[in-house]
Image 1 (cartoon, helix red, strand yellow):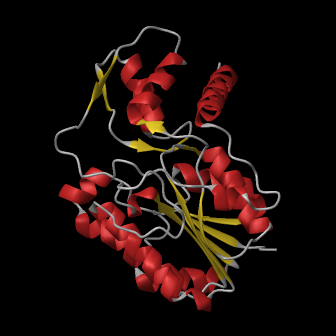
Image 2 (cartoon, helix red, strand yellow):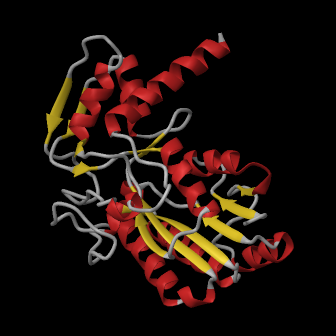
Image 3 (tube, one colour):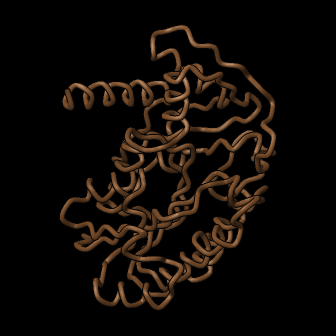
Length: 286
């Protein structure tokens, strides 16, 4: 049982929810408290806190900015930051990774599929995975958990962006030639807590809600939940964007085969739950 769990990226949509779920066991660490690209600072922090487990939710996830404006920062956070955390030698390590380590030429990807990232963000996460795999024997327990399309209430993400555009009366355009899986953060958190409390065989696992669709199909389903006519235009590409895999569907059979692991609901039910939670939180504020 892990008694002290360091959660980096604790102000983000995944890290904040995970720290809350872990309760008193969590040592939440925000970027303002610790810059994981500062190797000396990471060593001091880990030496002082002495966590049993580090769960790295910190990441530079702005794909387009990484491609065109901040490639060095993306690499520093997503690759060097992971190295700094791992080299501080915690006894166990969980890295949150991404579907963007793949190039999109297959219909779906298993954990052992060959990685061929198509953008700088994907390259940075791939290099982190490669480093962790190379030093895996230094950990008593380690996992790389790949996921995709995270969304939750209270944070900026694809779902909340579609809602904001609709409420502002903006023209909505969404790409219809990129297929992936989306992941409701509370469902991912439940899965991660299972790894903490019931550690399976170490390695790579894919976690995302069941089913896949294009971003356009996701947008249309989100808009349908608003119960008002809103036009959404399907487009094949958006100018000035980094290349993305055309199909980055993660195969989750390995995770689903784990004994007693929380099952992954369909993405449609996940979006419905997102709106239920949104409605409940609004009623509480009123």
